[in-house]
Length: 97
Image 1 (cartoon, rainbow, N blue to C red):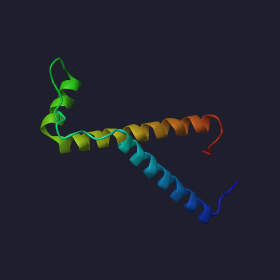
Image 2 (cartoon, rainbow, N blue to C red):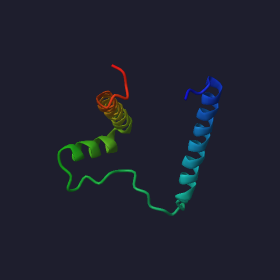
Image 3 (cartoon, helix red, strand yellow):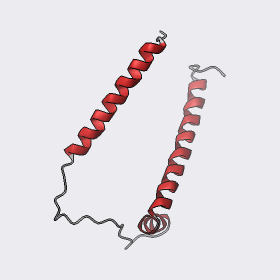
Image 4 (cartoon, rainbow, N blue to C red):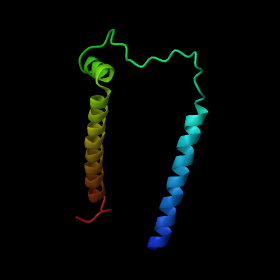
């Protein structure tokens, strides 16, 4: 069953709207932190070693570089998942070669 472009657009807008409502509702459900709340903005590095220590130090010292690294890793993992899904879909015959 093919959808017309208009219906597909409306479905996309509806999905976006619902996603935004759910995300904002989740954020509000967390409650606020009072002004007296002690919020730590650094990661404790005691007992960490290897990659965990590297990431904790990177987060503590260079937040922007940490954000770039996490974004790049997520993009690479997303592409890997897409490739695996492509292979599986071809194997079951759900996608043309």
